[in-house]
Length: 141
Image (cartoon, rainbow, N blue to C red; front, side):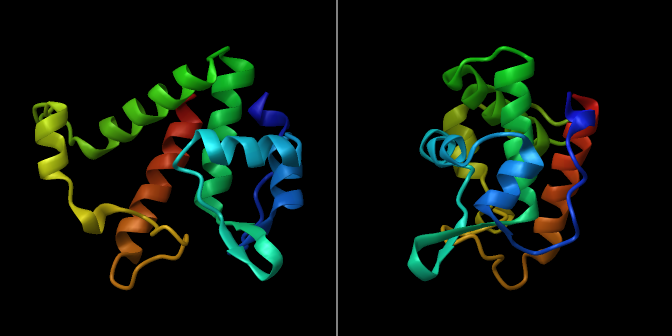
């Protein structure tokens, strides 16, 4: 059903209404998903208005697919997203680290956005790489 969704315009920020239309969900569902999925951190500005970035729209589409198309529960979708994120961080041929080792090995510069949703200076290449990986995952689903 992702094929029926409209293409995402080349914009930096999207309002919650635009994201709802692009992803085929209601605005209250998006607000609820923000509480359930820590990966969703839209920028909040004037009057607590939410502004989503392109990578967050892709994440919402992935969440929608997991919940509505593949039949995952919220908890199951959360676990699947964490599993997919972990797979993206481990290059092919490299052994998978245990969770305790993983926290020590995490590179803080590998995060795409800080808590406010802005891209830290010097991490734009890392952010672009992460966004491309998310697009690749969407195409394989």
